[in-house]
Length: 162
Image (cartoon, rainbow, N blue to C red; front, side, top):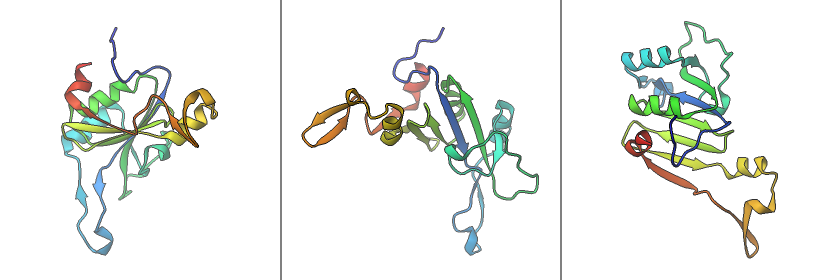
C-alpha cells in the first residue's frame, strides 16, 4: 500500500491533455513544431493515451475518434480514482501535460522541468460544496476560502518520492 503525503487520490476524476504540435504562428505560414519525440508518443500510446482534438482537459472525450488524416490533434487520457499513477508516469518521463484533477477542482501544469504548478479552481470548489458557510473563513465583507493555496509549486522529485 502506498502512503501519500500531500496530494491524496481518493474517489476522484482526472483528465489529461498532452500537446503534440505547436500551431502558434503556423496560420501565417509559420512552421508547425512537433513537441513530442517518437519515444514519448509510443510511451503515451502504450499507457493508453489517445489522440484527441481537445485542447483542454475539460474538453477531452475518451469516446472521440480522431481520423488518421487529422492534422491537428493532441493526446488525452481520463481516469477515475488514483490520478497519481498517470501523473507519476508523465513526470518520470518528463512529458509536459495539463491535468484537470479531483472533479476539476485543481489544474496541474507541467512543462517538462523540475517543478509543476497546481492551481486551485475556487469556482468549482464552491459548486462542489454548495456554498456551505463552513467552507469559508469570514474576513469582513469578503469571504476567503480555507485550506487551499491559490497556486502551489511542487518539486517533481518530492512528488515522486511520496
